[in-house]
Image 1 (tube, one colour):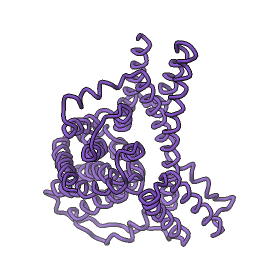
Image 2 (image 1 turned 90 degrees about the horizontal axis):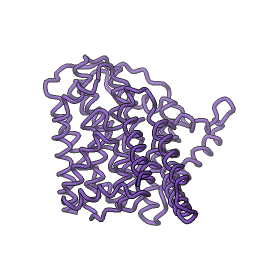
Image 3 (image 1 turned 90 degrees about the vertical axis):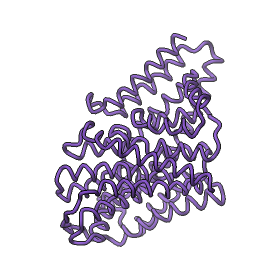
Image 4 (image 1 turned 45 degrees about the vertical axis):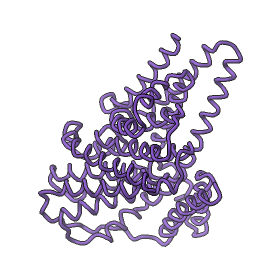
Length: 414
């Protein structure tokens, strides 16, 4: 029993390291990986005999198998985006699509739509970085930049919930066989409506115009091909899973191999710029953070410390409990929260799982520290503090609630 309390203490320290990363300046991946591995080591050291150690070893292997599927999928998806981003493909396409002059109001809606759509294909961090970089290049006044920043965070988190390529928590719930890819598609409509409502509210009082400088790089033929392979891989992943139950990780690794072979056929895979090197450009600190978090959650499940989450669902209907979990994810990172809920094996219907997917995916937008998109935005936008972002929290809560209600309504209809 004493060991259990000690291990729970390690998990709390790891969570504190994530929350106060901006104060300690210690990368959250380092903190969670340290405490995640240390906690399992203590489980082995203080196990009661060989039989207990064999059980711990069995559970650790299962935990690592789940983590490896998530890791490999993310590595494949993030490599595609890292290549296209490094080559300037995404930024060049955006600059070509934009007019020379545009109203601030219309630009706000364009930013919302781009952030929403791009985050469905790319990971949240990359989508946020691209969107915020474009916003900052406009040279808007500080108060208007804040509105764009808040909108980007909400739109990125909202866009990611409807595709397994867009949000880790969505991918985790899918891999746990709680929802199907077709089920998740239905989340895109209520999510998009909520984003458009937020954009409408934030656009009040914006009446100026913005001049956009077109400084796009020339796009190579190979980059078009790789973008086509990326989109085709997403379509193939969806179809292969729906019709043949092929795991998404297998489809994406196949797509990644096609990308490597096509680059070689185009004679672009040289010693000077080898295509395999683009794996180095993905956010490995994010992947290590997920590894540490999932090890910690696996440890907590091993010692039955997650049973308290079930209590909430015993006292409240799932639709209310999920709504609260979404708000909680603005304080507690949504990845460990989702992992913990999945480990408890709560019995819910499809409507409830869809509402939970939306809640933990979008709820982190309520506070700037509640999601990776928020933390990235805060690090890039000068003057965006916790308090300044919190001024928009009531507005974000209203739109989050609207989206949640729309998810429930649509789920009941279908």
